[in-house]
Image (cartoon, rainbow, N blue to C red; front, side, top):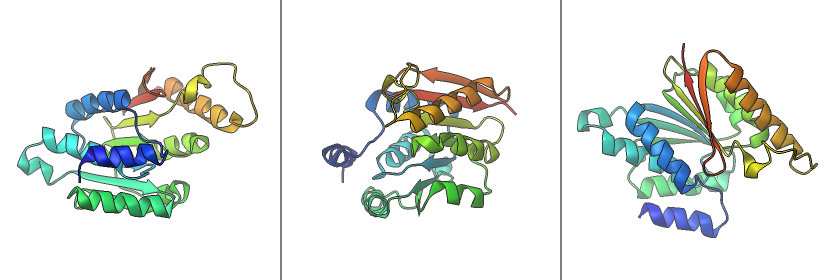
Length: 201
């Protein structure tokens, strides 16, 4: 299977996946930081996790490749099974581990330290995800939060009921990462917004 087929299948099914320009920035971060252990929240059909694994494999020596590990959590069982299928088809089952369940419940059970986090799940839960990511991080870890500007609503005076909870929590996330002295954060206006935070301690 080709990664472009996985991408197109997701787009055809209207399943949200990481945007191309956002992925380009993440590619640069991955190439520079070379994380060995990644935790992703929101697997969908596995597109982003597969992309991350491929990028890392391109930048690592054969010896380093053995240490690459991506854990990815997905609430929707049907999508998780599709992700597992796609990951297997790409021959990356030894690099990517799909955990099926609610990230809010699963995160507190994890205790390993990760080099990078990619948050792309329920927008209303981003502050919870951030708290857990910081707990599971170490000095130098990178925390990425996708869709942080949420169609432009977050930085506008948007206050409609339909998306109010998501917008409120995304604003809370931005406030937390920009005011936390233990984090160095940039909010990038690419795709639907990407928050890039580096853990300083």
